[in-house]
Image (tube, rainbow, N blue to C red; front, side, top):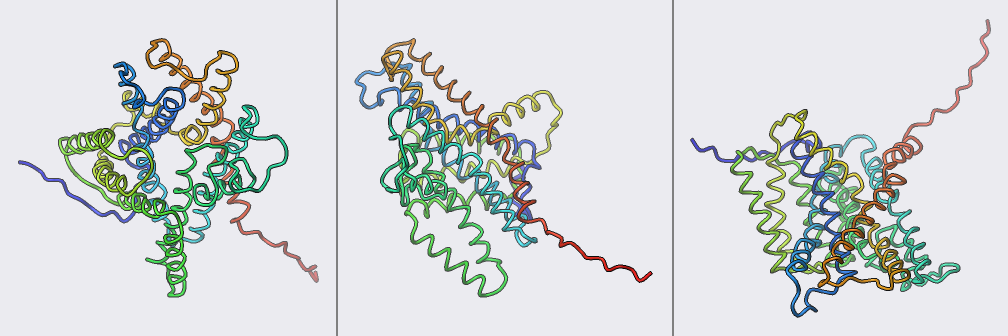
Length: 396
């Protein structure tokens, strides 16, 4: 007898409670960051595929498999909505929920972003892209103090450029404003008093109307991730297999036929089309699994390892690539690779490996301490401070 899938709305998002779901999310976070780094590295040190009259089969393959950076960023948005949005919905209405949320988001971004901006500045000074001396406040200067501060507060591509030409930071502007817009939306829907809801609604409308069109439009993609974190789909292996095939097929189709550069209205439509089966697949992966099985343990260990420093890899790879290109030009007399030379492919993977290695060391120095810094901030800002009590002398 054929059993049809059943869809259930859950009272809370079971984040981290489903082993297969958690494994896939961890794996995708690591793979997405690696895909973005590999794609940007190819674009920086190889000529564009469209500029070549007769590219080799090997280079065609490299260009294809490292050409999913756009889709990887969309996966980041969907997973961010799933994890961050789902987590806030789980604790919304509890004491100090928004204060905890704000510290969580602030420490998650700044623990990695602040040292990244400093490293980007250092690389800029080494390679000659940044002028030595005091930083000016010209917003048009990508190495200015205004650009530095603006990138910390999600204003890159809004009022200031990506700091130091580190162009992947554009997506952090999206993330920063989604982190602000989502709690405002929750306050509008379930914020309590009329004045509180009205103030949240006014702030939300103001942000949606004044931010760049694509930031506001892609908030819907992020919201999809948050909404699906509450959905459970009970289905069999065949259904999950079909969802997986459909998701991969759509990603490949739009990689070949769709918009794969900047976020535009046309890419929004394709990303929604790709995102829905992807989220349906995630929602269906809530079956029981033996987490002590050797195969699962090995896969989960690798997935978690790469996911843990995926953020560092994402924000750091461009300044590392810039430095590697500078060193190549200084000591090897070249800062690019030839797609028709087989040994240059080895150089490509060597540089990619170095980028990943530097990102992992950076993670050990900074990102790994996020939870410790977060807990210290909460203890400092949220823990009630007891006033010293003066004890009167006993008449006895």
